[in-house]
Amino acid sequence: LVKYANQLQDIKKYMSIKQFIEYFKSNRLKDSNLYLDYLRFAEKLGYNLKDKKYLFPKNLKQMHDEYEKQIEVAKQEKLNNMILKRNKNLLQNVYETKAFIIFPANSVQALINESSQQHNCVRTYADSYANGECDIYFMRRVKSRDKSLVTVEVRKNRVVQQRIKNNADTTKEQKRFLKEWERKVLSKVAT
Image (cartoon, rainbow, N blue to C red; front, side):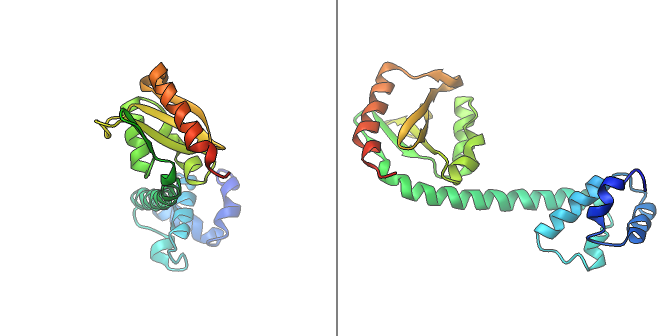
């Protein structure tokens, strides 16, 4: 019990100490943190922890990992919905010339794809983008809209980051386009 002292208060929310000991002994378990994480996942997913089949899973590690995946899927769905909503609001800022187009990111997968193509960390901006802390745009050549060219971060209608592959600086031509977009489109958007 001394070994699990830190977790016992949290575990007591779900069961008696006696039940905890019996479950751990009968299943030869050693990791109370894994079990506590499992209980939190099950609770988040809405499982009835008064039901013994959920409270005392037969294969703790397998169920822990399964519930963790379910939580991740739910989180990604929620982020995607939030990003899609932001995207719809930001579509008014799409700007196109003969050479370039710039448009807002529309999903977590789009951010992951951009990160992969550009070898940058824009995928880690998903939460910030979804919550409206920043705006993420992709600048492309008009003739190759699926191929990443410049990743752009905007805050308060100002370009704060503009990066090409491997976080390198943009070309003069790309900078000119972004300045023009900022002046013609972003500066006219109410904050």
